[in-house]
Image 1 (tube, rainbow over the protein chains, first blue to last red):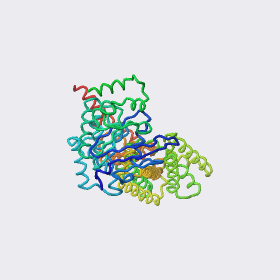
Image 2 (cartoon, rainbow over the protein chains, first blue to last red):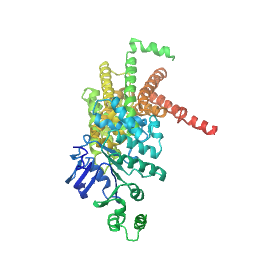
Image 3 (cartoon, rainbow over the protein chains, first blue to last red):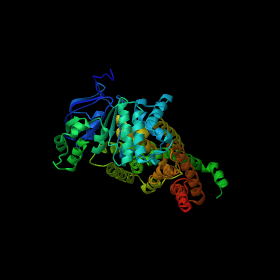
Image 4 (cartoon, rainbow over the protein chains, first blue to last red):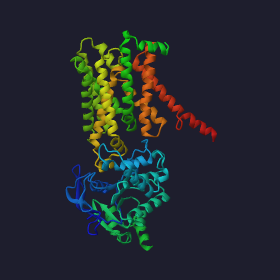
Length: 257
Length: 286
């Protein structure tokens, strides 16, 4: 039943999440289909990371449910490719790029099992997909920011997941690097994966994503970039921005092109 | 004293404690060297310090009750490690504060307990700074078995331990039991400390955990190489340290630590890639 058009790769239905007694998310509805790159946009504290952690099965919603390919998530059982923020990773660890990518398979291998030829093949394939094969033996500590992001994506891809979650992949990268990565993400989605990406970079989200979801405690609005850009009310309520903020001027400019 | 004289002493039946001390020092160096790789890579030096102090009340209890020292030390160290792991789950306090609270408390308990033993000043010094004379043969066996178990567990869980050290959130998302693996690692550190405490002492054992691994890290960018290099460096340091301390009548623990530190400094200056001398040379070359 996986991949049938009726079941989205990711379906979040009426999800509410409490953290330390405070409600962080209420009634979140979101679906991501295979083949689309969806940008999750919202101010700091809007609950983007909480939503991602809920999708991963690390937080339990108080109501509503998350389904991946029609099934409930359980950490380790549902193949989700998770790409954490770059600064959450111990880059000073003395590990080669290929071995780092292999750690993406630790959970599915299970205790006491060592990787075999098929697993190394999956690693090689993932490295090839993000064009890092020539650097496979390089220690991860020697990589640039963009290369590091590619390694994290490759690690997530090693599991051959249908759903990819990217947490702030553009933060701290220069424009050319961002553009190369955006191209990679679009490619990954259009090959038949569902890709959900949180980002603070509204400009590149408007440009590169197939669909955007505006999040502030709940999904305020969702739609293709061109249509959302024409709906300034959704943006002002999401970001609490005033009506003549730079954000709205940029959106207006975006609708003109 | 020449190395040959040292060898003669090693085989002198009147000095039977010397080969025992050597065996324990080498075993400790190997085990601490491998475990220390994680201690260094995960920035756990403070936990190592904590555990090595936390072992003390267990040793003190065992000493006063005339029980098994290794067992007593292990129980106390593991109890502290578990307390730290559990209390660290509270996000309001960071791990280092929790460690600070518990290891001083454990050490204080040890001081109070051992003061109840008759003639305690001597035994206190023995615990704190180590002693190469009083190692019973039974301890040798216990230490050896414990060491093999530690290395076996580390080897079996290598993949998981690397994964949780890289980033915990991804590890959790993959279904890896982060909390339990952390606990296993703490327990392994504790055991490594316990089997090393007798020769090198409570306070200096941290050097066996941290210094060889830190030296190895300066010399390589491969965790596998580091895990082989670190125990090798530790063993060399222990051998040289024991020889010097025996030959010139210096305290064993302190001498081993100073030899290891000299090795660390040498690596700092001479490392093939990151060493200061190579760096200076490159600067001149330019």
